[in-house]
Image (cartoon, rainbow over all chains, first blue to last red; front, side):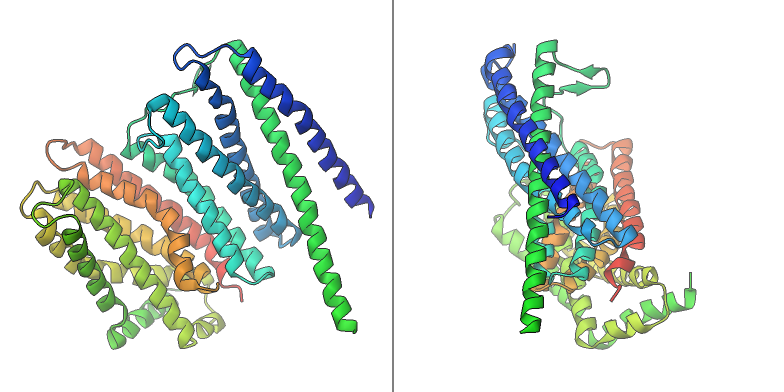
Length: 234
Length: 227
């Protein structure tokens, strides 16, 4: 194992350790520390799962799109995996966002899906975009062309997000609880602290998953390359 | 910009269409058949959901029809090796995208010349109707967005396996905000909710959508045709 791979192993382990510490702390805060919401009571606690997961999904998408742009700019093939892996994780976190959002809608508004919620509906569009990205990626043979096409489509998503937010705002009423306003967070100190811990836990989990999956995919590529070489020399 | 090359590229698409009549005729038949299907599907007498629901159906039908055109034009070029000729030509790749977008726009407008009166006949003649000026303006703005983005996405889809399935899958997430904006612009003019500013805001949104995806198409198409 070379030095770079060893350093990556360390980073992945570190991120996993941070996530392993922060996750139970965040869960403890959510269930035993933070007070019940005055309006929604105990069930409002799903907020500490739903919003950090959604924010992590956006962060993963932004990282994937940034690497896609860097790939098109530089042509560095290693950036293709750095773009693909966050998109893959984004689908997983995106699914969790939709599921937790649906639960929150049920306890808040009494329905599993509310078409008047801008956040839920914008996220649904972005989730469909993520799924389409995978359809494209797996319908083109591996190689430079697949990397290029995936990068182009990932970048188109950068245009889709603000356009979707605007479209949903134009078409519907806003009834989603507004947690963050221009004047800061609409929460008391303990709630904000719990939220930030939950966000840090979710982000560190995503970073750990990103580094582990990236390493796995790179190993997979190396094995495929070695197998081809071995077949060639036979 | 090489204007002669651009005119030649658009002319090539239009001449191919005039000689073969493969795309526009299929689109017109498809869109009218969709209206009939919706009309019977939603009930014979009055449309369930009223004019608002009908306006939504119009935009859905237009998006599906546009996908038909995009898939067919790219498939035709692959079948007849026109694509190889285009790539060998010493023209800017962005120009190929622009010409393709313009010809798709022309096809869409041609289809809507038939589709909008048919829509009026099937859905609007016996109920409150939207402002026709707004409907036409929204249709033209939506056509620009569909043509610009569709030409880029169809290029991506045409290189994959199962490209007929891939194009709608890639295009539909982008069509949702377009349909939302277009429906919002047209139904906003149906009485009693008439407001000039409200309509202008929604048409402005469609113009913004066009601007964003025209810029993306112009900048990214060269990566789609690098072979």
